[in-house]
Amino acid sequence: ANDLWQIDGYETALADGTIAVVIEIFDDHSRLNLACHAAVSENGDDAWVTFCAAANAYGLPCQFLSDNGSAFSGARRGWTSPLEARLRELGVATLCASVHHPQTCGKVERGHQTARRWLRARPAPATLAELQDLCDRYREIYNNRRHQSLAGLTPQQAWTIAPRSGPAGQALPHPLHVTTPHV
Image (cartoon, rainbow, N blue to C red; front, side, top):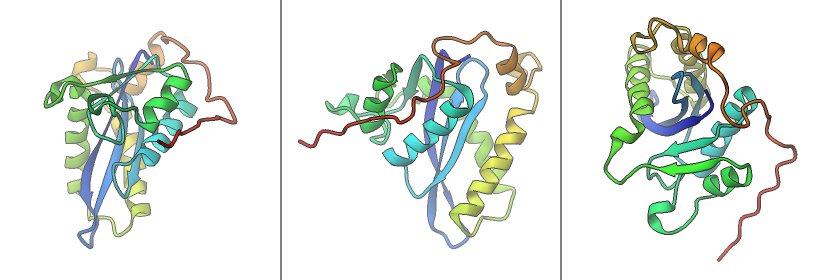
């Protein structure tokens, strides 16, 4: 646990047709859904909010894997995203999937499939706050449901019994000082 986290977002519609994004972070070992955040778009600020929620609850990971979304990584574009810079300042190594290779982030992609199916079975939320309430309920259910891939354990059970990797017991330092150079 906490050796590698995966982040990604997916789009979903509110009742009025407005598109929102849900950003999720999963622990690679236990498949625990560490954070599930409703946002207006897949952007760096909401990605950081999602990471902070996960880190405050579960400690810091050794490594952080994302796809090539500009909110998560600028590595394939020749720059560093604010999320990457903040993670590196915390001593968390950042990894970026190869272009057009979603299998690298397969666990979070598979998690999205389950979440989307669950959300579609409910009335569409009218607001972002209602979507967040649904995300919180879903996360609780998902983390405490048995998984075939975990030998019948729930993600929460797999997380609880797993040894921790890296700085897992450390909370985020407060206040966190992150600078953003403007070029």
